[in-house]
Length: 528
View 1 (cartoon, rainbow, N blue to C red):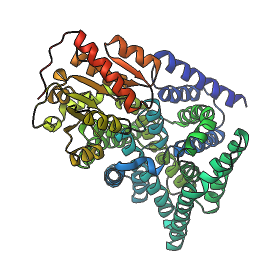
View 2 (cartoon, rainbow, N blue to C red):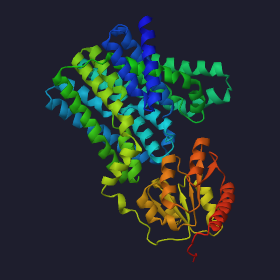
View 3 (cartoon, rainbow, N blue to C red):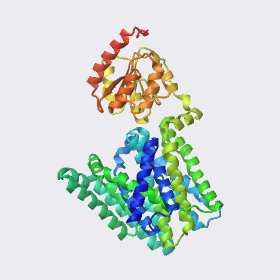
């Protein structure tokens, strides 16, 4: 118990340092575990492994709640292409790299599988913190994570049962398919009835949620599958809206606690290998970090996404997964690999997870955008002036667009969602596929010559770039928080503090903002 208390104390210090320095907490939690391990203050390794699995089970369950297949929406085809391509390419590159480094074939196969999937719990958490789950690239990333995790769950029985013969492989595959099928039935029909229609109180709801988790864990154990796979599928079974929101409210307080346990225990289990082992880990980590962003970017762009969300998706997916640890733990328990492989994959997972919060940032994205060879290809055929510029035309923007068009305004739309752009082109609405904070896109849209600009972009930094570029043009900005509203107001914009502003309200604000623009006596080119 003293060891566990010390582990939690170290996690608290890691969280405190991260908050004080305003940096992501995961690297600090891992470093806290490493530090406690070096001074010999952690519990025995067996107990530490149990804590690791416990924390991972809860975190994967919570992450699975966010992976509703319906949330992928119009990005389903792109997610399938990106997910399969990344899985196959990294698997092939990992196999070639492992063989080139001198590992045996069986060890190389496990290493290859460990490199194929990205971290669901890390990426979902970053998307939640940045409020990007519902952006086009966020939907793409969710679809990719869901597909890759399912592929890993299906392939784990293949590698685990290969030495026991085809019958063992077939039994394991059938068990995995059966659990996936059960998950589909639950999320389509059973879960909404249990959670919504029965009107459970908070205690009953929490008990029902945990019951679903333990049923899946029991089934996974019965079928010889990793417990983590059962926890992931249990979370997915509770992912339909609005069930996921209700369940999330019950689990949020537990999530941070088990996050601290998992990453601190992971750091405590980290054993630094020889120089040769460090070199092997560096090579495999570079394979993941360097190959994933360009691969995802190319395929996502060919699937219809613009440059920025494609690059952001690639950077977010550039790490190995918690399932990587599951793969090598299972292989180690079966005697298929030695401690060397477990240490290697643990080191690669820790390194890539620690890098992701620092690589998947706006600053890195824009630097890569500057190097992108096809970034400048989006242009509008006929330059516009005195028009209404609408940045973002999703669920909130479409009713507003219809209102503006009916009122006779000339409107130009900028959106990076290929499905939205396809609908606009079908309706012969002038539009540009691109990012509203990209200065090249703003120049192509003649933002400085617009009559008024309405932004539904959710990130404050994006709206800051817009406001700094257009200067005196009236800009209405949808915001979700009071702090963001104050920031927009200081920059000269007009914040709309509603998460779901109605079209008629926007239209009212439009008239007010136009009057403000006239009062400023700015020059407006006359409309045709």
